[in-house]
Length: 281
Image 1: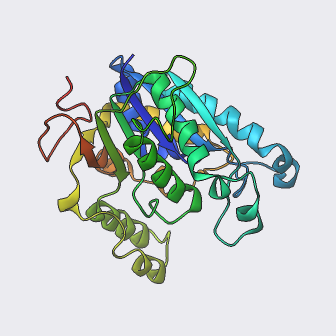
Image 2: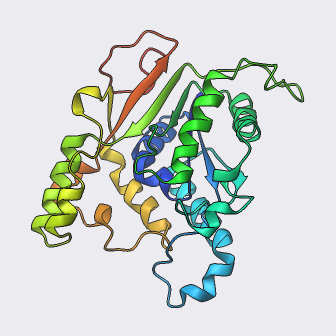
């Protein structure tokens, strides 16, 4: 059952950076698996009259929202890696012994590798070395994802268990946003009065230089599913969130493409691609 495995940090991350890709390949009949590192038990609570009431069971609520998102996107299987949300760097929850940031490196890698060997994906996606915006759990997704990919055949560190067979995905990608698109979105938000001039200047230099983007996937037919998936994460994503406030005429260009950098490929593929399975199909 070869296909795609997307490794993410929290419930809702699968929708924001890869929602269109997941829906596209699921509809095409690929075996699409999402692994979420943490339970999403930290962060703000939106769209709820009494956030304090829901917080003690926030992990349970976000698991329910994740299941709804997975159903919308057509995800074949979803797994939680089993760690607690780490919160932001320097916070008390970042020191919690069960959080992803405090996880034993080899244990966390082994957990992910069990799922890679079980599902045998041809393509795997993770985050960039900065985790997109520096969140501890996103940083860990990059570290653990890279270790699982490049350590997949090291049976000394990660011995085979319970009838497992060695498996390394053919291609590894990091999901990213082109710098030009972030500039366009920032300017539009500033002109609409959604952010201040200072906030707009802070985002200068964010994103990946366009020339370093290897893979641009057209997901325009699946934007509706992507938006529905985002809204399924109702406690995390308010209706005035920037991705839900993109003007209709700009949605195809902003949300209708998802971009990646190819980290490694065991098959021949051109530097510029329009398909994560380029060279495999």
